[in-house]
Length: 383
Image (cartoon, rainbow, N blue to C red; front, side):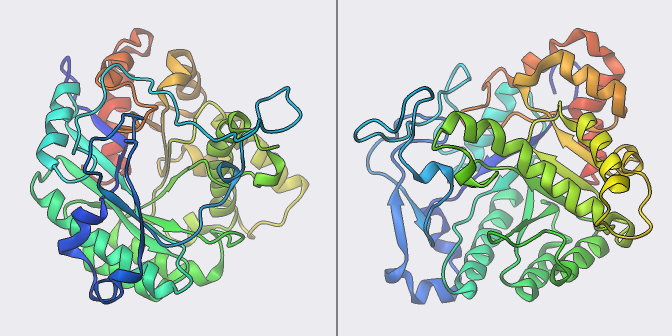
């Protein structure tokens, strides 16, 4: 709690190292452990230099997208000789405490206490992309075991998402059912192969399992690949600026346009770290395109009903600021936006993320309480 406000941080991250996953490793992965690739974790999630001996992260597949090509600085004809991407610049004030994003849940909770945050929703990282989908699924089972153990050490403070993959729908459904009643499990996040749409009929068993369990379908944008990396002219500035909003724009369009919120009436839909100032524009544009273009499910209600009717939520990003938060709240209602910090990543303002947002006085007390706690509590069924 900070300044009398309970705080639910709806956008934080956790990625267990290979060393942390070791006790929880799926038998299939344990048998093939010598074949699994890892990389040294030399640079921390906020850009800090990690001390030796380094921990390691699993790598199951190739890393593609716009970040894979040598970067080109805008205004120059091509990449400079030996050009490489540099890590993002930390936007906070003090690096998060080592271990909080990996092996030490006590450290993470101390960081939460320093910021005045009551609950972290942790978006879990998991290696993926192995040629054999069964290996990806085994990794998800391993990550879930580790999350179950970690969150049980701080019940009510650490919460997370059940990971699913379109490459193994049956296995994903089993994992949803296995952890649906776990106190930490607040949503489902589905990994999609390239060119696999989120509205594909084969994914219906995942949505049905989440609907039965009352779990929120959650999208978190990342920078790799979208929009199509060939469109971004090898420039990380363009890539990072465009990728996060577009990933969520596409997800909202497909999920709502396919009628999935009608077919599964218990589902909430949440987007995280995707920007939010574009939401009113996209809502209005989608409504126009439903009538102008079509190619959507029959019998849809208005897009505004879906996006303002109490089942759609969006995490804020701090850099969009007070005026943008007020504008979106006035246009869509003050029940949509949720506080999110991006801890422990470089875009967080640790340890002042909550303090910065609490300083947005023009929002007023009631709207601030909804932003900092109540909306996320409704989105993820805390209350």
